[in-house]
Amino acid sequence: MLKVKALTKSFHNHKILRDISFELKMGTITALLGPSGSGKSTLLRCLSRLEVSDRGSIVFQGNSLTDLSSSSIGMVFQGFHLFPHMTVLENLVHAPLQLKQMTKKNAERFAVALLKKFDLNGKVHHFPNQLSGGQKQRVAIARALIVNPPILLFDEPTSALDPEMVNEIAALIYNLKSPDRLIIIATHELRLAKLIVDQILFLDRGALVENVSKATFFKTPKAKRARQFIKNLMST
Ligand code: ADP
Ligand code: MG
Image (cartoon, rainbow, N blue to C red; front, side, top):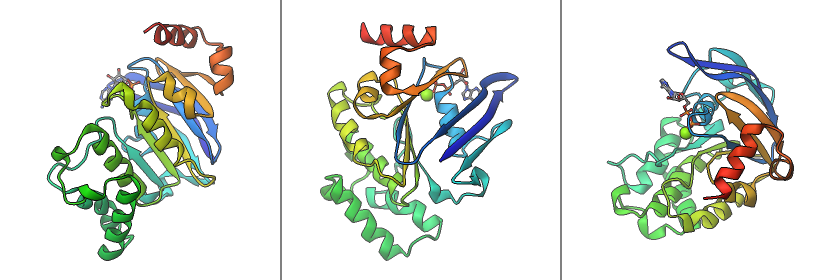
């Protein structure tokens, strides 16, 4: 269980996250929806400890986020953020070697197996700029997965890809669903949310205005901003 309580974050006296509280169960996939600028990336960055919140608490399986090891949280960034000067293999083994979690030999063995699973066996020694968008995305996911994190965060996983790849990414993320993992996806893509998520969190100007099951969200969203959001996206 992930418990977020009264999380608040400001940048330059500007409140970006306002008193956010929610709980998510293991084994679930959650979509984090909301207009651009509503605070989705900031919330993911707080969850992945790239930002420190001003107030509030984040507790995972009874432990404060600050006490967890770095291998507890995997993040797939918008635009992937692969290390451009490293090969695909080097990108993958970087974290487990930094964390001294695996020997080089083991890390490489794991990495090669993961790359094979993601249909990237021919790309092990390529550099990121030699890959297509979809391949970069899969490398980024493999890189996040190599330490086997129980919390897996995706920031706009389809935004840099061809719209036709949404189903493929949806299937890929859905396959990562497991009873001992919790997945959160910040996304603009309603199709992705409709296909694979269990729960929806909707942010509006830094406030969590909706925390409901997928069925409820699409059938009877209670927040006005959420209704408008669905309507706007449906019409495009
Ligand atoms: P979203 O991902 O929903 O589009 P973000 O979390 O990226 O929203 O941004 C929410 C707000 O916080 C925006 O107004 C953005 O300009 C601001 N913001 C995000 N990161 C920073 C930062 N490091 N410094 C100052 N302002 C920031
Ligand atoms: Mg964002």
